[in-house]
Image (cartoon, rainbow, N blue to C red; front, side, top):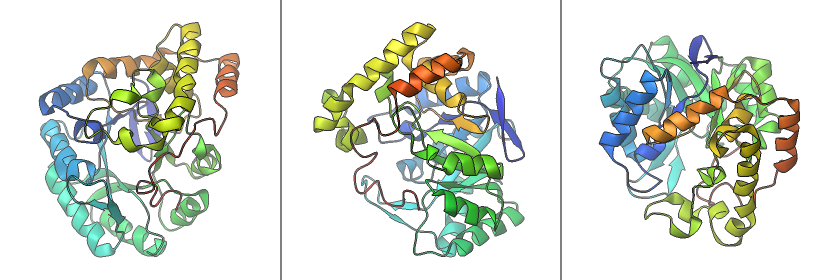
Length: 325
């Protein structure tokens, strides 16, 4: 397994996003999810990403079951700050010190660990002083409850302000062939500060693999109300999956592998965290580590997927709360 640096930790170059094992992508099966988690660890994956809001605690509990006897050999990233009622997509952002402390204790309990390897602010509340939020997280580091801290979906200026208060180990934002927003300064800020960049939804929530039928999404699949997967936006985006497939054919790999290899080539500080709950998809994704893209390949990909090519917003208005704070 190839590795990359995340603060003082060495982690696998590809991590595993675990959100879909609990909700947002239709029905899931804990037994299959646990098999996928175990297979990932066996294949050398050491970075597992979750959050307290995924399944309203279920995802962390699932990771806790997986971690028994394994913690210390893998690294767990989890998040706080998005507060939801079970079964509802609506959310509010809470960065208050009392909430951060309580959320950390709850995550430690569900995960069954004494220290969270990487603790992200899932979203920043613009009404909460950044110094207060980062200061509270810094105290959790001092207390040994958190090893490193991260931020999600932040603007470059915010990252630099936060890093002046306490080292920021990682930024997590959506980044893929059809979402190139981080190139507007965040990637460079991470590089300048020695901060890792963890790219979530690196396969465009499955769209870039060509395996998603937008007309028959399962009940409970949040893509059914995601702008890019619905109405005229879905029609406008249909050709993007075909473009990935055509490029992948020239490299003798799958569309997923091409999309992930492109991200891996964006810089040594970029760590994609594709999500899956199936062992076969996991192994396919890991095959991206063997795909080599030369300058001509990268130029062809960039020409096919210029920034802004996707039609529609990344999220519904509810999901856009706290983005680029």
